[in-house]
Image (cartoon, rainbow, N blue to C red; front, top):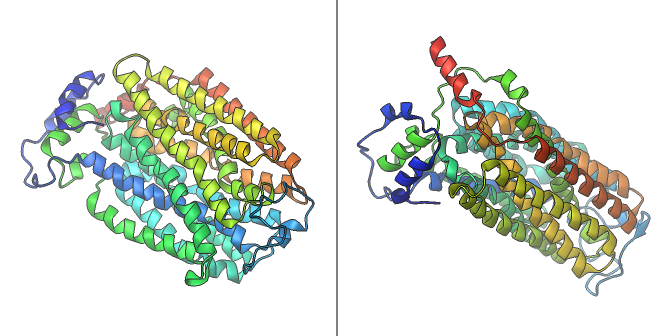
Length: 498
């Protein structure tokens, strides 16, 4: 990232700056004052980062809390071949009030229900963010998801079907978050910062997991607000507080920001295409081969990601035999390393691009290869390590950490090919990549139903590894990181039609 003194030199390094934007450049900002030395785009990225923390806290809290909600008897009565107790884990259930006796299949449906709703609002969310501004699309949807999270304990105690409906609705309102963030980056982040700023903001996902999982474990074993229900109340309230700050300190574009410095505003107007399109070029988008390469990779990496995200607590509890406190801690550790990898790989990627050591296409493919092959290799190893808890945790940590390379590889590629339509492109690929969100947990539930064994989990890890490798191959064969002509030409055609 850079300060205002670096921005002039960067403008010269950006290929094909949109000189036609110069007429919008201002020379005076009446609000240029105490905040003039703080780059507005970094402030917005910081609030987006905190938004992703809330987003993932609302998403993953159930994955950990369900271990405290469902009586272990509903698992222990199944056919179980697990590791011996680790000294802190008794074969008898710990003294804890469990309220539900859901089967593994039912738990899979509950955990996957979020993604049924998440599937349907991706494309429309991105398109609305492009047309009407990403600020309110991103913020309001997370806010509503926070309110629904407050209703989760009541829904669970009423009926499992009502819980599934509430989780589905949370998915509906979280759906526009990633596409609208993509639209936000397309307005705010210059090309040579796109391997750093968006991935760092998106790393709020990992921070959310790191914070949420041990905190949920502590809340579930406490008496605060009834134990496990507090894990939903706490994060619902924190989300509402976050929204208050988001609504005050952010704007959808530099031209709308009341406190942005003149220097930063001029810089952004010069090096980022300022869209004035009337229509979305759907036909050109759907025939874009690099986009489909991104989509396939997005689907495959999400399958791996969601299987681990929703099912690791169950694996830790039923197979490795960690207790509730250990479970939350062990679940958080891999995402600490994913966060580190995401930040470091982003810095290296933008360094290689800015110094012209590697092309954009080469950078994205190298990151994707490391992430895809690395995560698949370590997942396969987990399946054959057996009951060695230390090695299992190391391999799972390495597998999750390797996924961090995708944040600066395939998952940020939308901005490379068409920044003007980033919201729509992210919405399209994320819609398809949501399917693994409910297929993955159901797959895990089906494989482990009446069969909680090391062999069953070996199948789960091997299938996930194979899917990850397939996506890597397709992406590397088909992706090209050059900007698509229609990203600017279509805009010009619309202007001529006016």
